[in-house]
Length: 236
Length: 358
Image 1 (cartoon, rainbow over the protein chains, first blue to last red):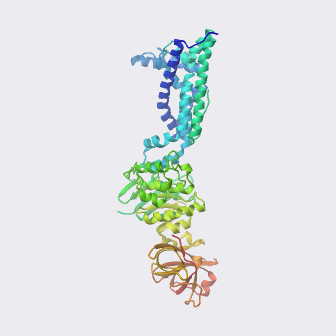
Image 2: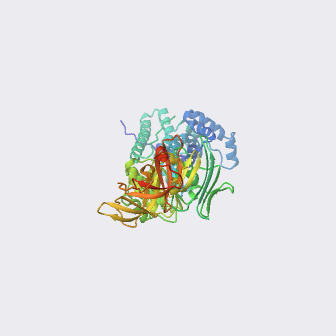
Image 3: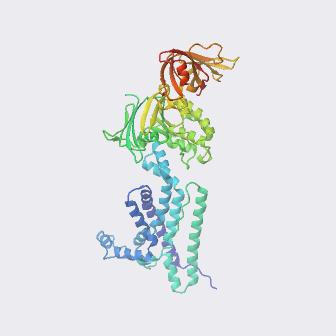
């Protein structure tokens, strides 16, 4: 059996996927942390609506989501027209388009564990902080976030891993352009299509191993960290 | 203007709170009443943790809130310390971290006050995490943390209620030390009368969201109209000074504001201030100075008032001694009639037990 090694285009797909997952995770945290905090604290009815909206990607076939995004962002779609008018150009089949789609698709995987962790902190700790002269933002940084460490870790691992493995949305909105939008899951698909099972194994096995190790590390970290309960919710 | 002004009106689903308090700006003011009477809500309103529909909170010249003018300081802008019923330490910070969290947000700075640490016995605990502390230790740290902000008012919400009897008696001496050493006013909520007797300078009796009676603890406890008078806990508290010891008989002589009393030997030096509690059930009355009585403490007094319905078995008598100190005596109605007690009569009070409590 000849030795199989990764081809340059495989490495390209891996690098692109890692970059996509990292950028997406940054954006997910920037949006997800304030959103989850608001959802955990709000008593307004709007909260339920937003919660449901955020959770939609959990139950929707990724191709459906990808299809609508394609329509919205395309040259005939309202968002597409707006981006063209602003000089940004069209987002489908570009890296920024992929980031946008992945962010929407992975949002519940970040928001839900964060929301559960934030809710578990309860009012008392916030009241204590206020009586010790800490304002709301101060309290968030120095009490809420440290106490939410397990939830933040869960959210990071789930958000990152979920973006890594995404296929349907990416296929619809990103297409299959090597070096630009061809991510790992699609590279695997291409190998299988071409009956290059050995290559597919290498990539798929690597992804499997990475996902497993990340989740294992999360479990171990959360167990040793103690404090708030470890939040690990599957989905989709 | 000095003193603390606290007025809150609040309509909740289950009850209405309507209190108006003028409290002294030093010493411990205790809010006392049954569970659910609204005393914790008063404390939360004072701290700005709950917002009254109508409310005024002023301490000295500073106004923290006034619904008339719309002034409202959020909790973190009010220079107060708050001790919750459960210690509520930050679990992610060591004892030192918890204390400096409070200190570094105020002018006091990161370094905890050594005197405070010594007062509450916290030095040996500094590098421990909250999970490794006992319930009593946690509450002591919580008190030190509240004081680390150098507050102008300390609010304490049943700080002993979550502790068992042994832990309570572990913490009470610390609270009494604070009581003696602290120069800021304390607002203390409890439903335990022994804490009132030990700690209160000023007493506010609450029931059903309203203030029933308020005043210096000696006056309120010696009042026949207070809700306490109808309980078997009826008693007076006196502040006394150790005036001597009788080592041969193991007794200590006390001067309670001119009243000369003996008690079982107390291990502290002459001149030391003590608080005494005398239960009404431990005071009996005689028309003439008893001769050959085994009771040591016999003081002449005037019957000032009596309470008790004509169908009660017992009645409560309020006495005033020559030095102006009040005592309560619980006697049977039959004794009252046999002695033909009337207000203004001079009688002799025999005090069976004088209990030093702090």
